[in-house]
Image (cartoon, rainbow, N blue to C red):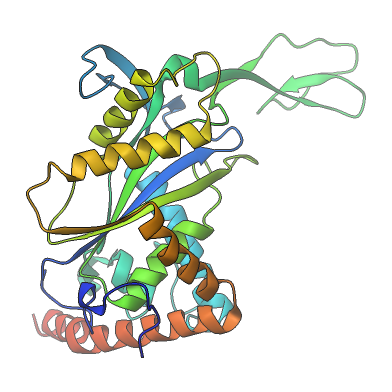
Length: 336
């Protein structure tokens, strides 16, 4: 039974195919920071030196949000839901330790377990870049902790003796609130259930970046979905096109943060212009066309009955796929 009425069922497979079949669902997402997250490697914020826009040829440094910083929190949210509703038991499937290999998370997002088997992810996420330049998008904080006697110590320091003043200070760069990262999440060969599973994970995920911090709040603002017979433009090109749109309209007012309504409007205009230049067959749900789909998805995911229906169908498809294809891999590996 179809769960969605606002989307043609021809965009979906009736079962998860083993080989690539050329159907793609692209989720157009603008990730907006709502606190001070950390997207870093080796203690430094990730950044890249790139061209400012498609037409603006000036070079600027932009913050980077690597693909694993995006996909991992989203799949962990999905795994949490699978456990909540009893489709996965904690001892059956432990992330990055021992995958169950037959649940929606493993089949949709992939896994690799040495000689035991592997499954390629059907969710493709690439590095996202901030619209604004690095200098406008980050802030340096001094980190210290108070003790009960009123003295202060830097993070990681055991503290000072009574009457002793410490001069050691630890500093850390954080990304500012209201920094925007346009990001396209691609699902290859979707079924209706896998489409809704990934859609729901994106909508529900609230924290990205370094997991050891008490911050990292990020909201995903979806502006559309594109169904196509191939991959579409990159995150970088979409970001550069948004930058051009906002610059031409006088919306870039550094050092003030960008206005979210301006960003969303520019993101929609930019993606529509870029999709008009594509050489693939595509159907775009953007603007008013997307609202009907978003409303229907939200009504499904807002109730226990709706969530269970999505997870049940996704689990049924995953187990059928695993039985048909992964069991054969395990048998072949055992024989060799």
